[in-house]
Image 1: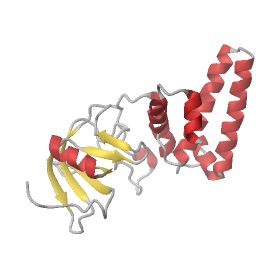
Image 2: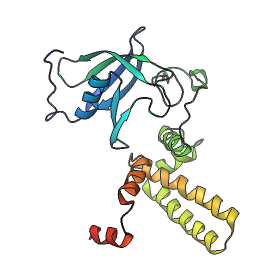
Image 3: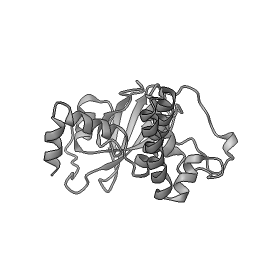
Image 4: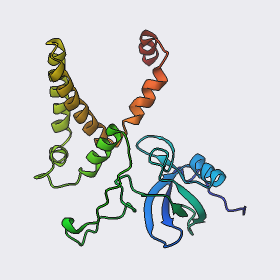
Length: 222
């Protein structure tokens, strides 16, 4: 391997463009920290750093749509990487071959659509759908309307749904508990998406607390 070095003290996260090795189609943009970069070099499979999950992830770890790295190029300023990869399946979580499938110069009805959507869990799918609809038409998207109205709109809904869920539990109404619980989780995800915090980070915090007394955990926060 050559002696090309990246100054990780200067650049904590490096933008990375993934490009198809054979036809040079641009597939996606992601980020690497030093650990992800080293894992990519060692394994020859693309590893990235998720800003929303705040962790390293191997491309395709859930979907199986991995990226076998054939070449790596560093730009002239040493602050952007280009990966030439062999893409297995779709690069985009939506099921599209590339993440760049929305042509702003064409009407929405003519946009490329594919049906092979990777089998992510429902919370992950819902979170990404909320993220995608942030900038949608507020007249046709409930999520977009919430974001257009600002934080107070969806935070008020979180409080309202929490109250309704509480009353459903108090009333021992199983059907309403499930229904209101789903509403509460949905608006909870909207709030997380507003700050670009992936729900997996909540899971990570629960894992951290696992096996720790709730009383001791509360004391440690003080």
